[in-house]
Image 1 (cartoon, rainbow, N blue to C red):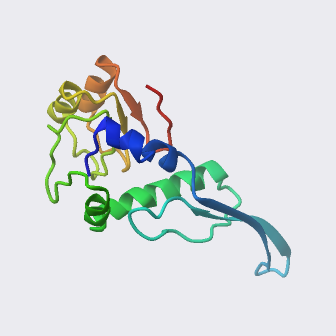
Image 2: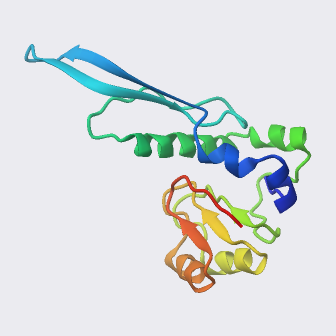
Length: 169
């Protein structure tokens, strides 16, 4: 889905993507295999259901942080793009959608590549830059090859490593 800057502002896309819709924090008490009682802080983060149902589950590993879980929920929201629900939102809001294409040549301020690892090369990054992209929020693990990352840095495009961010222009 490709949105014009005006449409991004009108629909408040960035504001809607920067914070989860709901976070539930609670305690889970349990007994381990040795008869010891344990308590873990538990989380359910529901990021955004604009382009599909909330994804994820309840997490209570002691090493997980709320920031990590916010990111995982954000990533699940972006993964809904791959599940074919984007066209429904595109139709609903009257935006241009390019199914099964890599239309990097479409002018944009923000890019949210949800590619597989090493799918965006240096030439792809330069196309985004030429078309006015000022920030790239990666919705996958390492979608951009090193040449692309170097091009972003050289052009002062803001690359974000798989996380939630807020832009002001």
